[in-house]
Every structure is written in structure tokens, then in C-alpha cells.
Amino acid sequence: MSNRAAHILYCHCAQAQAVPAATGRAVLDALSRSGAEFEAVADLCGMAARRDPVLKRLAARGAVHILACHPRAVRWLFAWADAPLAKDAILHDMRSGSVAEILNHPALADLLAPRERARSRATARGKPAASSPGGAGGLPMPGEWVPWFPVIDYDRCKNCLQCVQFCLFGVYETDADKKPRVVKPEKCKTGCPACARVCPESAIIFAKYKDGPISGEEGRLNESPETGVKADLASLGKEDLHDILRRRSALAKARKKAADA
Image (cartoon, rainbow, N blue to C red; front, side, top):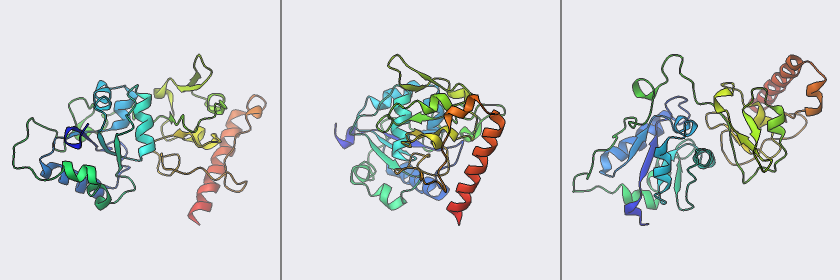
């Protein structure tokens, strides 16, 4: 598929604002001025959580351009939504990439070249797509579930099942092949990335989390005794769960303090 036939998806990241505001505005402005067809959605995580058919339609196009957060997070969000991206899909990291890097990518720059012809169809022009729920600007309505949930990077997962044993909320189950699966994303406790911290392969991604590699950045968690957070799973049945969670919270704060020092 040629670049001219490719499609562009832009994510507002409306429910977390993980993408720097200046970067998002500059990229969206360039898209709107270019004359290229694009689709703007309020929140890619929310679309993945409900397995929005729009994602399958986009993935089927092959050489799509996705302008969102970290590519590893985006790829596994699509995979979880039963819409795996083709290898020639191009994922642009608005979360850590510069505006120049994004807009000067050769394949995208070709698509964004100014056109004299009118658009062949109406496009989002920076507004959430019709398939995106929520209130004004795609922000969650009062009482609406914020799509905070994990996805698994199966290129890293070694099938240790620590996530399944660790999670207190029933988010994970094993499938017929005894592999971990996220089956109840809505059960995940908003803001809690604890299962990602105990994963020995850093295979669990929370796209809305503030720090990598849990957010989907490359790299792996520091597993040193001073800053690593590990779970003693054998102790779960022997100790008070509240004490365990308090200790985990204390370790997490110590790790953050060490990182900020």
C-alpha cells in the first residue's frame, strides 16, 4: 500500500493528557492545514477497552499512521482490541517525540504536503470522531469509567502468571493455553499499576501511567533491591492483605523518592 493510500489516526488523549499539550496542538494544527484526510479520536484507550470496530477498520488498511502515545503501548492496545496492526503501520510517539521529528517523518511528511484539491470527504478536523463517547472534547462524563487498564506485551511475556496471582480485582485470567489475559479491564483500580511493577519482564503496560516502561516506553524496570518492587506471592495467603498493600505502597514511594533525587 502506498503512502498516499494510508490513513491517519490522531488521539487527543482526552482522559489523561499524557501527550504534552504543545506537541498535540502543533501536530493537530499541521494535520488540519495539510488537506490530508485524518480521523481524530478522543481517547484511544477507551476505544480499545470497548473494542471499537473503528480500530479493526483502521488496522485492516495496513500502512496506517497512528499519532498517539508510546508505540509499544499503541501496538498492544490494538492487539488487545482484536485489531492487530500490520508491520508496516507507522506509530508516531507524540508523548516523547518532538514536533519536528513527527512531522518530518518521510512517510507522514509526504501525506501532509499541501494539496490544491479539496478534501474528498469530511474529516474530524481536530474534533473527536463520532465513535468516541464522553462529554465535550471527549472528556469523561460524571461517573463514567476512565479507561485505566493493563495490556500485555506478549513479545516480552514469559508466562510466569505473577500478574494473575497478584491482582486482587480479577482483571486477569488464564486462557486455554494457560497464558495470562486481561479479561475484565473495568475491574482495574484506576491509578494502580502494581501488577506492572511485579512483572519480571516489564511486559505489562498502562498507557495512561506517567512513567516508563510501565507507560509503554522501551526499557525495563530497575530490579535492584534498593528501588525494585517485587511481590512475595507465597506470602499472600499467610499475611494480612492490607499490610502487604501498605508495604507495597511504601516501596513505591521509596522508589519514586530515589528516582527524583
